[in-house]
View 1 (cartoon, rainbow, N blue to C red):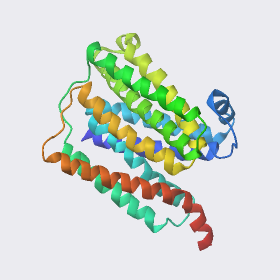
View 2 (tube, rainbow, N blue to C red):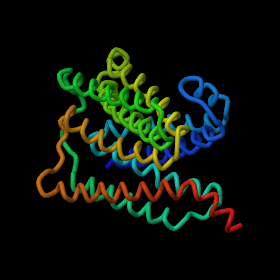
View 3 (cartoon, rainbow, N blue to C red):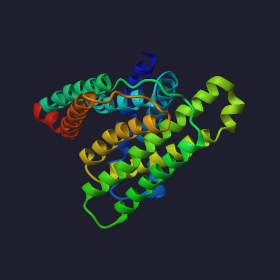
Length: 286
């Protein structure tokens, strides 16, 4: 139960952070890489966004300490519904009807997916024999997505590929964070600072932030956010099963899990269409 509570709080905090980060990124016409982030540092909205992301990281760590990654990370799909509600209320804008349909679809899909899968079991630590192949695959996927995004292509393709890279980075960071926080909880600060997972999640997390900033700037929100949100949930489920040996239901339950995933994807699609229209609808209503 604590894992779910902290996971939901993390999603809300991340939604706030991402909203401010995107506001800052949208004011820059061109950019990329480290230079782009250095330009963003000068903007107060970006600083607020980083604080939101830091709060999300704290809640995420607490959630992972109290539950399996296959349960915690999919909860961050709730970031999009929270983003819609936060923006609508803070800016006093009328939310499009498809936005509320998207909220309902995401919540229903997430509930169905997690209820059917019922992630449980596993451990907080894993041997190198499971870590090494998982990290090799994840980092290769991130690098491959970045290479594809650098090729001449449409903004949608660049946003999707960078969103996928950020999603894999987020899921990998969560897996390393789960192991590191458990080390801190069980053995204290010295063991935490001497664990390779601590530095692994820090470096991977920084890379994921860089990829997210560039994904938000590369193309439409619908492209980057859909890849980021769904990709993070799916990769986390795979890492939970393969690295930490967490268990999810199989057999006939898979059909319900797939149905839940379909509802989630449809809801994310509706939300990414609705969020950019909040301001437009509000102006018409004025």
